[in-house]
Length: 412
Image 1 (cartoon, one colour):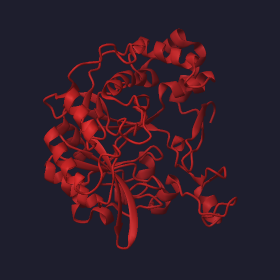
Image 2 (tube, helix red, strand yellow):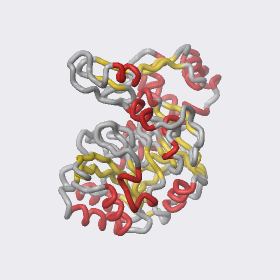
Image 3 (cartoon, one colour):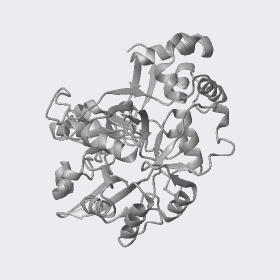
Image 4 (cartoon, one colour):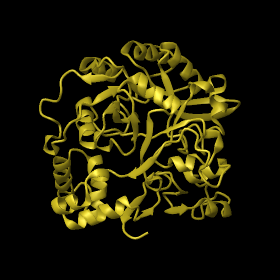
């Protein structure tokens, strides 16, 4: 079975998230986007865990379904079709810890197949730090030891390092990361089989470093609100089950790749200082010895620069378990670029509702609907712009130091 999975999201219990980040809204937006499996996020938070227990029931395959579908779909105007969304128990842990005299800050995604395992993990973490203040708790816990806790809770519990190149909070980040996966997980490195690339990098960038060849590269939205689902997703062709999905990530068989956000649109792609309005390529940063030319303070070294520091190839060969990938953007962002109006305007929202109502979901519109149909039903200009988008005729202004990049559609 072909299906799409977005396995990194957050509930309203996480800091800086939408108050609308509830199961019903994620269910509805997953149908609109065209996603079959969604991570629950935040299962370690007591309030969210209670809500998961109250509203979800086991599907019999290691995933969960809503006990009751939204009585009136949260976004019924869209009229998405043909998809019954299931949930995978997931959470993100922020590890801030000392090792060999240095402070590291690493984010990890954890997954378990049932509520008993989720409860067991949470009970252990509760003895280490406060898991009630944030859906993504900050703990003085080495990721290696977190992985041990997850495996003790369930032999089918897994850990995937999150957004591995992000400067401030990741396993390979320029500000607080390691120089290898092995350095972090030591004797348990063999339990790590997948890495999340993050919005600011793509598979080709990661495949410039041969030490990552043995890992499957996954991509997720890291959504802090339901409408941000699907910025990146994983593509599978397996039995629809927890065990089959993770077996595909371990072996590469049945994992068909990802839909990727343009890495240039990620908010840490290039180097720079947002406050100083300074954006630099790695080469420019090297000439400045890493110092901001405006304020004289150290620059935030971006993902591209950090990847190039580690790279031992000039081309992404030796792809290991790499599968294919295609670039995408949310439908409202595409329509905004095509029409020249803000993504939140009534004009764009009306077009998005119309498109999903006509064709079933956003990914169907972005990738599959014939251009002539788009031109006929949504307008010739939109059809023409979508054709250019599918052919890679876009212009990108890269993000840096926490500022998202932008794109426009036209000749490269």
